[in-house]
Length: 299
View 1 (cartoon, rainbow, N blue to C red):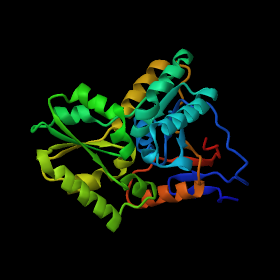
View 2 (cartoon, rainbow, N blue to C red):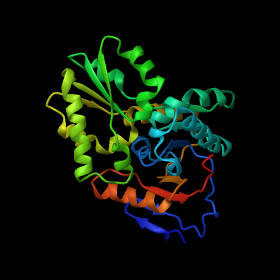
View 3 (cartoon, one colour):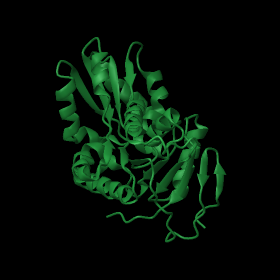
């Protein structure tokens, strides 16, 4: 077996006899897509708002990280996983990844428009960061894929025209979080580098541009100078998702029971479980999840 069935903290794992024995993908109220553990921060906020919502979650660890892939590769992957959810009957999707949204959101919205599929994307919370900046100097901390994408430039031109905006690539931060490594010299080094970059140019407002970074929100906030505000998109994305879900559901289709998040791991499920367990041990608030290996082709 890949691993034993049972509970590890908030993680329920499902025993699979071989990698060819795939878990069933069924219809969910909400389907969430991310390259790894980061989107669990968004799923957690959705669950906190309404614990009865049935959430399916693709952890696309087979091709993690999205941040260092080109936009065509990422868009193809988002399309592939979104199609899996839609084919199973799910009609509300969340791309809980800034890089994935930047690369693939427009195309999958166009693809599924006639199927009445609603899709919530994720973008750095630059608008509130700019609004709350007294110095009109803002930093967006993101992966290289998000910084290189046209979507972030378009966002800046749309919501922060009167603000100086610095794009900062947090090299290696998402990978450290994906491994569940929230302590040690590697993380300290990344945070110190971020501090050095943020502290220049009078930056007084910082937007986090990767869902993984939600898990180190407190660590980042602790190293920021006094008076620098920090913004994360997980809760706003969850609120928008709940709005769409509330609008679309019928009164006779409301479950009152609590539902763990059904996670489908495209890569190594044991590694995913270990990472989530380390995050929980480090003090991160992890939603209750049921982890299912679901081998899918990379292309």
